[in-house]
Image 1 (cartoon, helix red, strand yellow):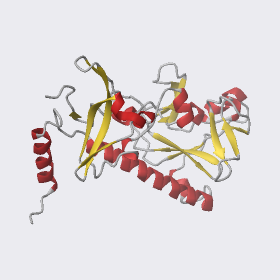
Image 2 (tube, helix red, strand yellow):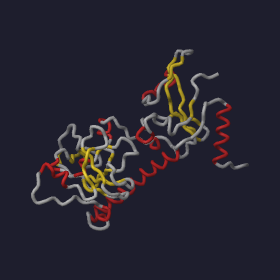
Image 3 (cartoon, rainbow, N blue to C red):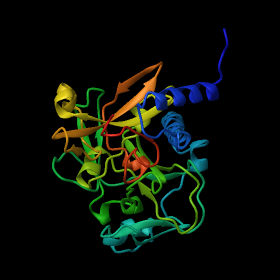
Image 4 (cartoon, rainbow, N blue to C red):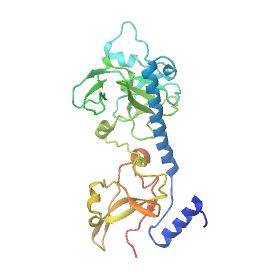
Length: 305
């Protein structure tokens, strides 16, 4: 028995697929980048839980204060409508956002280290339902039946973190927001350069309202063990119940010969088998063309001989 290394396996697989005319092109691009970004998400999840555990035990005493940025001290007399802006700490400033029509944004004046806690998101606490773009929801029980909101819509009752806007993609995102002990904290996810706008993910509901979906392909596909991913095309009548989960992110193709419309479907190759995957909008991590350009790389020809 001969044991093949990963490189030899891939070459044999590539030769087999090409000989069988299963695909037109085969190459893998940026798989490592996506896996690394997913690993960073997992590290961030671990770190913020560690910070939260320390905060619950020590509050803002050491060691949690080492990477914590407190509000700027307010003057004795000030315009209450300027409260949020006046809490901006040294090294940061409020100016027009780089995102069109987003109003003001929060910016760095100096470099900020990764995992720096930018402070607590302040606002008025209440239980009112409805569209509240400046609010974070805090669940009070594990069943998520009881909840309240931290609402920073009023500059007089909030702090400078209200000006941190929603990131549109992973390249922009440099702040992670998380709940801890009934509060919401903002923490940097990377080293942030001077004169950079701070941007975070607003959460699924607000993201949907803004037309932004934050879904990582590795959360739904086993990218570590799947050696290849392809975009294949299948007629609607052969998909049956799968179309319930098919978001049709990839463009359909119409075949004149068969007079059929073919849907773009994602398949992964693992352990000698191609498996159809649920399709999601991964552009937050992959770019505007989804998995097609930066990652998925196999294109099954529509017309087969």
